[in-house]
Length: 310
Image (cartoon, rainbow, N blue to C red):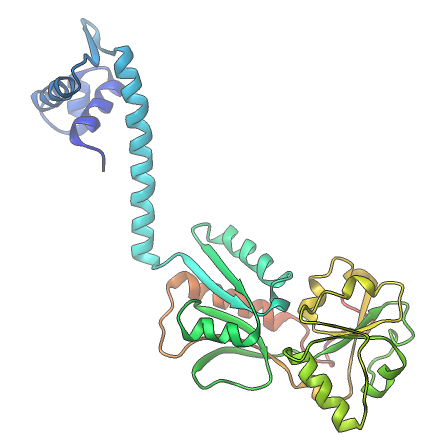
């Protein structure tokens, strides 16, 4: 991608002679000599000192060689990227997710995938469920991760795996040793839960209604991990999922206990793409990479450790 004259100039600088450069470039010596002369004429300066033992760069020649070498390396880098894109398609993977996936699961997945496929680039948008869906429908993101209790026919479900809600608490909490609990038992403790726009809150409200309960949460937030730092050493119980707990630095001090209430097991993790959209190679690979990790995580009370996930 650099000019013919610069390419011949660099070859003469490397080999130290017109003949050596001509041999390396598989051209006649006169062609190399002509290009060097034209380059010197256009710059109005001598680039080589002609000596009996060969061609030696002048001070100006050394400056031009430094520039030309950098330009050649940059041209090679750009050419390689263009060729990779021709083979792989777009190397930027555009993701949208609700905040529970952004604490730890997606950042670690992106970092690990990039170690395997260093050419990959990522753009992550974190938002509420309806905005995550809009990003896919409008083509702003290629892949979405969200919690759901129902499917959207406008989107293609690439993965659907159980993601029940757990009662999360300090390991020394009176309920921490239980294999399971019911919603009625939470009425005795301060409760942390998501706001009305979250799937956790929707399931909580449904479970309370079906059990004939009214439990007023002590702590409410649209950010599911906001109150997790309060749990160690306290009697507070938070309603959360496995992936959110993984994002909490004090996870070794917490326990997750499943519910017997069926409503709390009706949530799933959904990986979404737009119906009819063909993803680039790297995006498809990353989608499979995430699916493998999501299906390996505990997702039902039967496989969760009632003593916690540390």
